[in-house]
Length: 232
Image 1 (tube, helix red, strand yellow):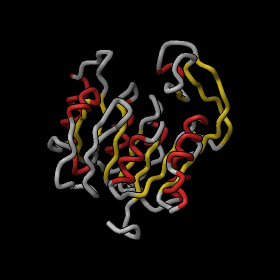
Image 2 (tube, rainbow, N blue to C red):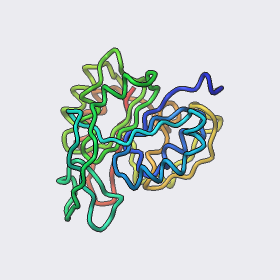
Image 3 (cartoon, helix red, strand yellow):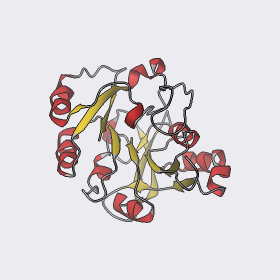
Image 4 (spheres, rainbow, N blue to C red):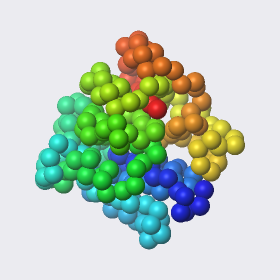
């Protein structure tokens, strides 16, 4: 994949850039959406070369329903836990102010994405809300959380027909397929800070949308288990 042919991935909830790095190494261009100022500064430094080369685009914003300054919350013990929806976790949070934008405004700013990864701690529906059939990326994933039923109704309406559920707690056992089916091969090792493989590189079979809907309520929700839903 040449730089001119590179497709775009939206890394929504870029955190400290583990997923962004994986996508870049596979040859994709990346639009990274991250609201926490400390992580924004880290991403800007980590990917300075890729930003200069026009392969990495950093959007230091949170996703919301309005274009405005708003409240954002950082866990008082662990700054890795930050969200626009503090009821996602127990504990105390420090409130800061960050800019919010509609996801639709980001879609309008860049070429259509090939894949959208969403992981914004229970607020993934804010991204899903702005998807349309005309703007639907071929592949999308979100982190399973309360609200998933409404999200799936919306995702079915915009045209997704197949999916699979990935147990994120088993990331350390995953290996990228060789040869790669998505971009360049990367001998990646995944941790809890990765969303991991996507699209055609996923190891399991794609099943019907209805099969995914039926499987989700049967999942266990132990403290060490969490899941991503991938759709196409």
